[in-house]
Amino acid sequence: MAVIRDAVERLEIRVLESTLGQRALAWHRRLPDRDQFLFNSVAIALAALLIVLTVLLPSTRFALNSISAYQQARGDLQWLQANEQGALKAAAAAAKPVDANSMVSTAVSSAQAFGLEFRRYEPTADGDLRIWLEQASFDSLVAWLQDMANRHQLDVDSLTVSPGSDSGLVNVRLEIKG
Image (cartoon, rainbow, N blue to C red):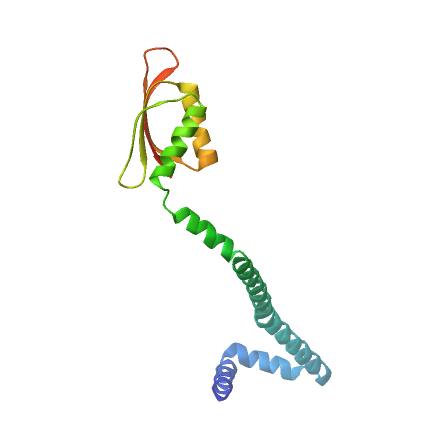
């Protein structure tokens, strides 16, 4: 407080030493007592209003925004804690490698349902499955790939399609990942 008081006193001395400060003080002293009181009252009210507008309102607004942000973060944390087990199960299921044998059996059985027959297939070292088809119906191929993705969660990693001998038939080389 002493530092602030000293700064105010230095400012007061500088204002009173200035020409404008001396004129204002002389004008104030020439006013009648009642007008001086009124002027001082208005000056104090304006100073209080200035303090409220520049210090108190922004501080209050900041505090209210902080409370709102805290409540939002707390709600998010509660939601995360409530759904933690489900997320952990989903992550574990997604991280679990697909068994190559089950991927082969799934691919073969679902391809047969669409009238597709593999010419050759082989599991890869990284757990994917390479498949070759010859003279396959393009429409059946597209429907089968969509079924693999939607129902079995097996996605195509790479796909090479070349035209077959008849219209609507294709030769295909693809790699499926689980």
